[in-house]
Image (cartoon, rainbow, N blue to C red; front, top):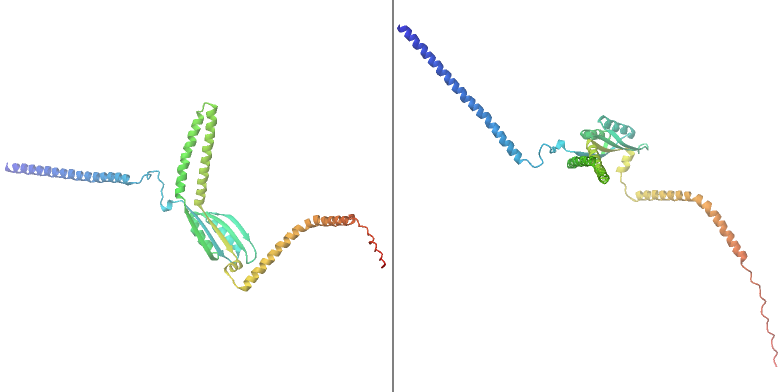
Length: 311
């Protein structure tokens, strides 16, 4: 009997301990969940406050439609001029054109003056802006670089302004078209057609400017001068002195005489065609005048009075 009572008490104590353990576990889990929820809610609230503060401190116009004006997003026009001395101008010109073509560009202009070692080639290369620096460096390696000038023009604000003006002008064109569709009189129809034409012309002008800017920013321009050895030596050598002045004066004299003889050669046929008949006419007229002048008669000398005799 005592054994059964002891076993019952042991079972009751075990059940009580198990129930207490479960209760403690549930409370701990509830407290942990509450803390987790509080921790999650706090950052969310803080994020909302931060977002509101950022929105309040953001400048006007910095919304979703604001342009990205980071350095890598700016619209910049690159232009460069360079002069390179080469041994073979023709070969160097072909290589420069190949460099531009490999970079994804093309040759916009090509002027060459071939005169043995004094040859000069002027190339205008259009290359993508991203490859501008690489192309300049490759061309500089074709020979000995004499000079280089790189210029940049930031047209980001102008591009943004053009975009805004184009959007506004398109809205005006659409408005004029809607009004034209609802016109009921000839006067309104003519007036709206004229207004629509002006608005469309303004829109076309703005779009042309935008295309021009897009072309200049997408493709950079490099003007390359390739000079032969003689052209380079003539340019670099600056001589002074009496002999240099004498040679310069003689060259100027020869050039002046060449121009003078050229003018005389051009005028000679006209002088022969009109000068010779004019001279003949003047000679004939002079002879006629001489023959027409009357010859005055020779008058007899007056009589000499006789001498009177003395008384």
